[in-house]
Amino acid sequence: MYYYYPDYFDSFRCVGGVKCPDSCCHIWQITVDKKTLKKYNKVKGELGRRMRKKIDKKTGNIVPHGKENRCEFLNDDNLCDIVLQLGENYLCHTCHTHPRHEEVYHNVRERSLAITCPIVCKELLMRESHVTIQIKKDNKIDFFDRYFDNSLYAQLSYIRDNMLSIVQDRQFAIFKRMALILVISHYIQRHINKRQSRLRKSFINKIFSSYPDFLPVEKKDIEKTLTTYSKMSIHMTDKITTGFVKRSLTDMIFTLCTMEPLKNTWLPYLNSIINIRTQMEDEEYNICQKEFNREITDIQLEQLLFYFVYLYCCTATYDGFLLAKIKMAVANTLLIRELWFMRWLEDNKVLSVDTLTEMAHWFVREVENSDENLEQWDSLMQRNPRFSLEILIKICSYFNYL
Ligand code: SF4
Image (cartoon, rainbow, N blue to C red):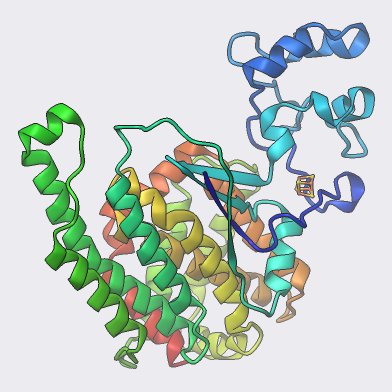
C-alpha cells in the first residue's frame, strides 16, 4: 500500500482546550462508529448514562446542544469529558483522526490535514517554503476492487503532480498559475469525456466492470498539454472591467448562501458583505483591491491553492469531472481572498494572520464539513454558469493586472 501525505502531516498536534481558537467539536454532526458505540455501552456511572442518553443508538449521532451545536461531551473549558475521564483510546474514529483525512484509492491512501482546524490553517498560511508530498510504502495489500478505475486514477495522479508543480512555480504570478491549471484541466477533460463515452458504449466493459485505458494518442496529448502549458506564459487580457469582477464574485458569494449553513452567523455574515458590495462603487472597489493586493502575498494564495488541488484533483476518479475539481480549487482560493478583502475593509484596512486564518478556516468548514454542501458545491462547479471557465479566467486576469 502507498501513502501520500503533505510534509507537515506527521508533526501536527492538537492543542485543544482554551488554546484552540475554534474547537472542532461543535457546529457539525459527530457520528460515533459502531465499534466505539459498543465500548460506550459498557461505560458505567454518570458519563455512561450521558452517553446512552445523548448518543443515538441506531445512527451513532451525538445530540448537539446550545446555540453553537456543541458536542455533548465538550465541557466549558473546551475539553472533551470522554478523554478526561476515559483517555484518548475511547475517542470514536472521527474524533481520533480529525483533522487528519484519508481518501481511499484502491492501493493508495492519500492523507491530508484539513484546514478546517485553525491551527493547521494558520501554519499553512504562515509557511513560506513549498509544501512537498511525501510517499511511504508498506506491505499491506488491498483486495483488488474491480469497480475501481485504476487507469483514470493513474492518469489523474500524474496530471496532479504536474499541476502542483505549476501551482508552485513562483516565476509566474499566482493568478496566472490559477488560469494555467484551469486551461490545462479544460483540455484534458475532453480526453476523459471521450474515454467515459467509450466506457458507456462498451458492452464487455459493462459486464465485466473493466475500465478502458486511455488511447496512446490521448496519453500523448495529455503529456503534451502538461509540458506545453507548464512552460507557457498564458496570455491574459487586461480589459476586464471592475464591475464584471465585483458582480461575478458577489454572485458566487450569493451562491454560498444557498447551502446549508453550519454556524448560525454564516448567513448573516454573507448577507452583510453582499450588502456592502452592492453599495460600493466600482471605482472604489478597484482602488481598494489594488491597495489590498499589497497586504497579502502570492505565497499565501499558493498554499491554499496547493491544498485544494492536492485534495480534490484525484477525487475525479469517481465521477470523471476533473475540470469541476480544479474550478472548485480556484474558486475556493478566490473566494477566501475575497472574504479576506471584505474583512480588511471592515477592520479599517488592518489584516492580521489570525483574521486570515479565521476567514479561511470558516469558509472551508462551511463547505467541507457537510457532505451535502460539498456535493452541492461540486455540482455547482459542473453546471452553474456563475462558475464557468470563462468567468474564473476573467477574474484571474483582472487580479493579475491589479
Ligand atoms: S480545531 Fe484543531 S486544534 Fe482545535 S480542537 Fe480541533 S483538532 Fe484540536
